[in-house]
Amino acid sequence: MDVSTSLLAPRHIERLTKLHRECFPNGFMSKAGAGLSGTLFEYFLQSPLGVCAVAECDGELAGYVAGSLHRDRFWRNFFSEKIVKILFYSLRGLVFNPKLARLGLGRLAKVPCIPEKKRGGWILTDIPAASLMWLAVGERFRKQGIGNRLVNEFFELVRGKVDAVKLGVQSSNLPAIKCYMKSGWQTAFDDHKNMI
Image 1 (cartoon, rainbow, N blue to C red):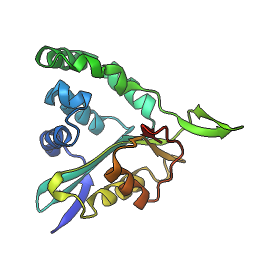
Image 2: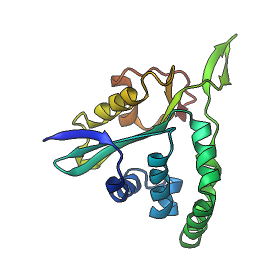
Image 3: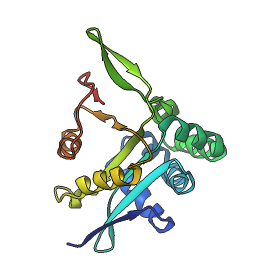
Image 4: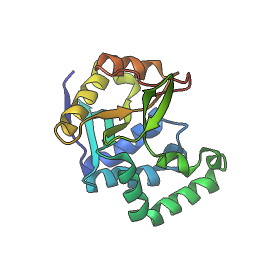
């Protein structure tokens, strides 16, 4: 199996949107439809803060990693520059999927923070760091090292541009946690629902 990684290119957008829906079927962007996720992935191409790489296996999209050099600035710029498209696709998604309202657009724009140990408790502080937002590998390509390869590609893309990299993952997502730990990540916070 010949696996190659490269930066996101316009030719990947449609396949990437489909893979995102397959890997995150209950996420807001998946439920809102291909238009919203396509708009977001196009923005990764445009924004100097966006970082996105794909893995292809024998010409087929196997996975992707996406994040930003500064998460809150990335989201703020995305919302301000693409507000008309975001509203259109979100409202369109609500018409076809009323349960989408429970997921809420606000979940996309959470301000990132990393916990810091202080006198017996955790204090969340915002530090300048790159954020790994999504890592997805198609089901038939899993357990072949592609996720680790994409995480390492992300590190290479942000190396020298930031002092730290952070991510959040649901505590129940054991395959993702195993992949991150294998790549050298350490747990800073675990509330038995989410990990940072």
